Image (cartoon, rainbow, N blue to C red; front, side, top):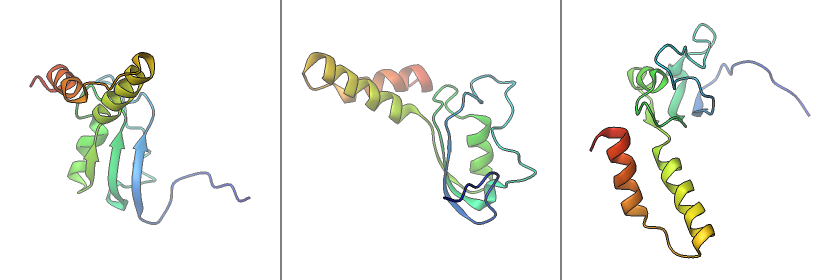
Length: 106
């Protein structure tokens, strides 16, 4: 097995931020932007959902990447947990509206 440590030099289909960097306004980037450019990336998924647009997602948009935050994961993990606990279908549409209201102010 070959172990690779560092940043890829080639194009990347998906970059996922699974760190807590981005939760606070003073947080830096989870990437070393001197070693890795977002222009290499097609899509960026940041598991953070508040703020709705992290600095990483904003930079990814500027670089031309497709972006998504963690709202969908939050809703669907909550729905799955509710279904496991209650044995009943979760009201996913209601859950989406509640999260969107909280995160986006809709």
